[in-house]
Image 1: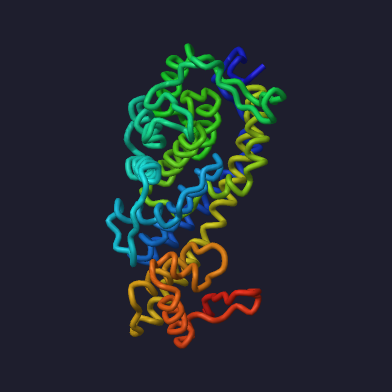
Image 2 (image 1 turned 90 degrees about the vertical axis):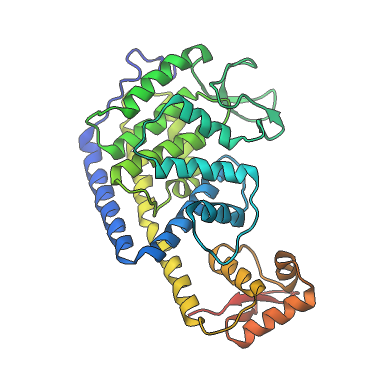
Length: 366
């Protein structure tokens, strides 16, 4: 029996005493982070928000097995936030779609949630009307025309069904209840409400695809309401990505359990607490970039060097070689080598002794 088949669904219950300590720690850390960010000034605060949202969008997609281009996500966000960053690149429609959804979630967190708004979010995730190579229903509830909505694993013919969502015919009524509750004054702590909304939405599973990303977006929306801020300086999706296996395990157990969701809320609050603790990493990264550009403000860099330094400081993966430099900046290998040697001469780059056959370079930062 799944949780939505229980007699009193969706009247969830939980043990407040089991959650009060975790909830107190979450609220304390939320306030501390907001205070830290307010103290660093508008420019650095905007940079921290850009880094956080970039990471959040990348990781919520990775949870679903989709890997977006980090520079495209960062560029798309910067354009829509009106930020002037060292370089902007073209972003694909699927990147722009998830960026637009997340900005609508966070910048308009206090506006009512409606079915049309949810339809717009889901359509923005699939601008071509396809999920991979498969055509899907976009901008409307699923219809189960190809069978019941199931979460399965395993090889074809020997699958394990982890969860089967409510039938399509019930979605209209289910979502009406959900939206009334979501928009209403429930006398529930806003952080707990975020955890409940996440479980409730993915259990109803109203769309043919995109349910996980939209559930996490709804979580972010309610967390923004909890802090009453339009900027985000921590990433819940990044922490869920780190705890992906546990996330799916507790989700499956909760969807097959009773209406007492204490264990789910304990996991949710612990995950959120870890996400808040990781916010220091983002702030330290932003401050490090700020110190770097201040330190070398009098040095002259060409456009290629500025682009590559920004990538190295932000989100470069793997080893930096002259061939990678040439490919990313669209220049010849000789030009790439001259660019690199100039930065080595300025003590900004140094050779990586662990490079192996080809010469690799790393930032030589204190």
